[in-house]
Image 1 (cartoon, rainbow, N blue to C red):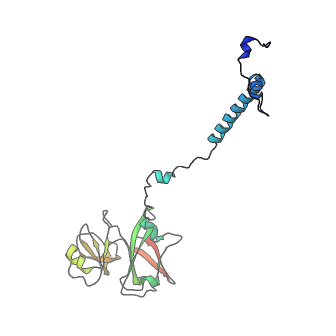
Image 2 (cartoon, rainbow, N blue to C red):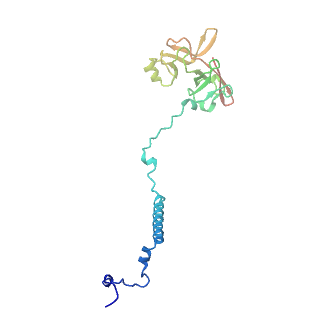
Image 3 (cartoon, one colour):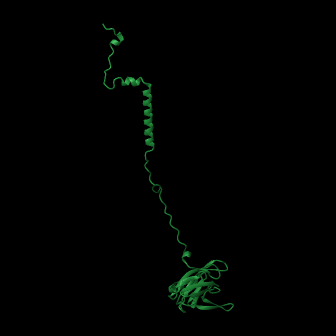
Length: 228
């Protein structure tokens, strides 16, 4: 019989594996090893979490794709900015070449010295007179002398017949659509004070011709100097 205690007689011995024999028992019995392993696990978790948080995110669709774009149309240009404005410093409104054809016309604005208002006006090339002289033109304010009606330059003789019931016209006229008055560009009218004004009334009840604008010609430039 051996000297081993009865309780140890039936215990099997652990196999001895070269290189790792006793490592598990030593690690399990060493508290410092457990602490190191725990710290390494924590660091690994922190490292993986940081990598996940800093990973590049997929950019979402641009805002232009998320919301429908509403195209706002550009504001239409102000027609008055495209028309010449006669001022004291720069009274030019046209050149002789663009007014060479009889009955050609051009709109412009001229400043009223009394009211400071920019008055819409019209320059007409008369079939009489020279293009190099002021007598070859007629310029007048498009606002009727009395009231707020806008005068119109009527080159369509058919409109004179249909809208104004005026059948004697053989060339363009000026009309007041409010009163159906017709002014003849080739006829003069004698106003009180012995003042002659172009645009005699040939039909209608208006009190006088349109307000005239003084024209001067300097070289090829046509100047609007002042209103009545």
